[in-house]
Image (cartoon, rainbow, N blue to C red; front, side):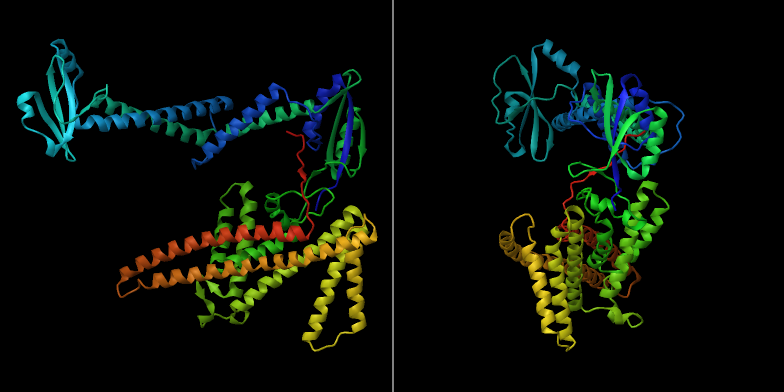
Length: 592
């Protein structure tokens, strides 16, 4: 559900404003209404610092080093960020330099390590050393009689030739002249080793930062954020009466009303409270039970509801669990997910525990749906003689129809929510058209059920129900226009509704398709692995490796599909039929 909100406006004398904001920040309940004002350079700098700290924390978090809670030295968080940036830039510079050095090493290696002193002494005597490369087969021994040259290395079919030339002039040999690097080979190798050593040192520094200073960075970020929030609160304040009076507006949960007003009375602050009206952009704070709260992050991936809408989290949560189990469709995989997440809950940070609890619920749903589909790590449970629950296993065709039935139930449930939402937001007449569709579906479903039971339905009641539902659909399709125009719009809505619902219903076949493909892949990996079993005990090694890799890959693909496709069914089919608009802004209290 959405927590009811109240709007407050405060008028404070300018000299008392800063202490008032400090008290308000300590209380931590007011969501300040942002005014369309430019933020000053001071706030921009603080926001930039927070952004840089977030980047540093993300960088250090990827190093997978276990943090230590205690530290014996005081370290400035912003200095750490600057050090990380400088060291990162140094890594980039070194890596670019290494590319050049490695190329020059490869270029210099075939020639060996020439002494620079030798170059100098020969140059004093007007002797020049020149270097050539040619194909080994094309080397002409007669060149030795014509020039002072020799082959100093042969590598990969290439002859590396050194020529000692007295004076200037051309060297007439069929070879490519090469210019050696300015540094010697030993110098290049030393520089390469020094760079690698420095890279290792920087990596060790980063590991040390990840172990010791992530907490420092988080504390620094929190301090800057608190100060920035304070500055932003001042920035969103309107100055009245020649800047003598400060006007601040914001929202609080209605349940915090007494707590806020007690503080305001103690501060002698003049304030006005009011209920939200239709034009207000009210921040959204969700308040659900422990089970539904686990699914709030999933709903948040799409959008928060509008203030006057129903929160759909409790309504899609059971369906999402069911869809996930349907898509994975293997009780063995579900059991593995369930056991793994339960164990991990005792080892992870408190912030991650809700996610693992959600994964445990999804694993439990997979176990149940796997028992219905009759699959356990790719094994068909119908072929297992000792399995006691064979009666609950459904054939593939029945699973196909089950996916459509579940889809129909969710779509119908969404229409009920849509009618409720329309009545809640705009009034009864705006929900009558949707109620007409609900009545039509119930009537049609009842008649079909009676026919299946060989019971003849009363024709008068049938015509009456269809007439009432048709009238509601057509006349109240758009209550804001006249009846005749509404009927015309209603006929168009009928076409869209029929084709849309039919298309939405077919979308739920994906549950059956993904689940059956996961089961088939598991079966295939089992069959491939079983082919390696023989008389030798060593045949179990490839058997086990193929099972681990195959089922590991299948679990990953199945879990990925079982997360993405239920989200698609929730955000597209269910949200559309529930009339969800969204666009809500999250409640963020001004606090420390």
